[in-house]
Amino acid sequence: MSIRDNLDKENLHHAYLIEGGKEEASVEILEWLEEAGIETRGNPDFVRISLDSLKIEDAFNLREMASEKSFSGGKKIFLLSVNSITGDAQGILLKAFEDPAADTHFFMIVPDASALFPTLLSRFYVISGRENGSSSLGNAEKKEAEEFLAMRPAQRIDFLKEFLKEEDNEDEESADSSRARAGRFLNVLETVLHKKLSPETAPVFERIFSVRQYLRMPGSSVKNLMESVALAIPKQ
Image: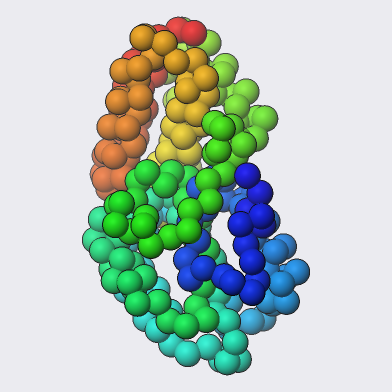
């Protein structure tokens, strides 16, 4: 689904949730904003934030910025891309979106909309980039996931060792941290597996859901969690 097909300059919703790939979605939103006459460079009323995990202090800061009047007297735009949002932060955002400021609009990009509380999700106009199971997947991501599924369990473990290899002094808040990469890979695996539904694959979705929840917990072992998925998936 095209993001721009859901946007109307004359009737903008106060908060959009875009489920899909960060890079692709960001490019499309930025292009649309420019075409709509909203500057995305050197504009104090345009705020762009990219985080691996949006925590409670980030949510408080975001709520405070959103409550401030725009410098130009026009629209104030927030473009956020996050891999996960803590429960406490979701509670703060919920309060912020219950009474949105006039002419303040949010575009939030997440890999998995189901990770949000239903009460928070209800405050957004949701645009799913994963409609029909694959529209947000690049060919390389899809191919990588299919190759992973075709491997023997031992080969999958070897693949994950390289895929999740951490750099020296890796920042877990980075959008390219091993934790963030694991979360994105799970989303691709889940989408590809949906096309291969069978009695053998059904329990795997429960495992992926559980692992995704644990991945959001600081200090959890990314390697152990992803290996449990690798071992749970039957050879395709």
